[in-house]
Image 1: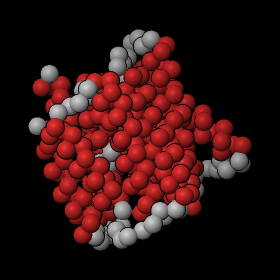
Image 2: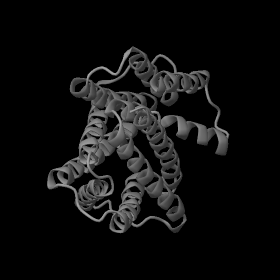
Image 3: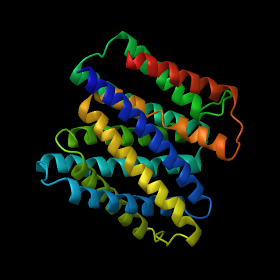
Image 4: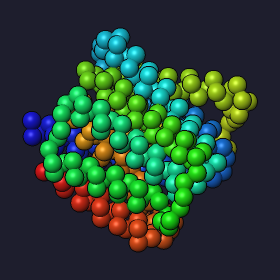
Length: 281
């Protein structure tokens, strides 16, 4: 039991690191073209990698119900992504990003407590500190009044990502790779239909391919690590730790581009470390 919990914590952190680094790579690629195009092709690359791995290492398919849960996870995940990008475009990133991340963590946390019970007081405190860390890491600070549009889009994005966590947890309860393949296939199909309907599907520029491929591989790694974390441990622990992904993005921006971190973000980094200790107890 202890080994399984330790593995869940390690995989949850690995998913946060991979997703955060993938967002950084995706951000680099998006500087030269459409962000949605970057997302679509990175998903396509990641989906191809998942399919190859599933063919090589998974001999049998899980039950149809689990594959269906994978499809639902993919659809909700890409809808969350669409609402997030719309919120980032129409609202203030410093409010939309952290609020959607906190909602993302709260939904599987609440679901897990209802299904599996409370994980213990130290971890509950750690969860609260972790969600505060997500906000601090993502927000530029200052006293900002949130607008109705920003609130709605943030809640919808968080709802999509939170349901993605829940359905992926169910999908990966018996197998890892094939449910991830179906999730990615559903996400790619949904994005293709939406982009084609709006005539926004364009080829990425040549200089984008490396960053897009890296974003796709890292996103796939993050998905696999989260699925493994939820498979061997509690959903709430996996979801809270995975929601710390902004820490990796912020730190990479600091290391690579020498972006200055505010006091609030450094507090967020410290809070994330403290939360990890409490969750690991």
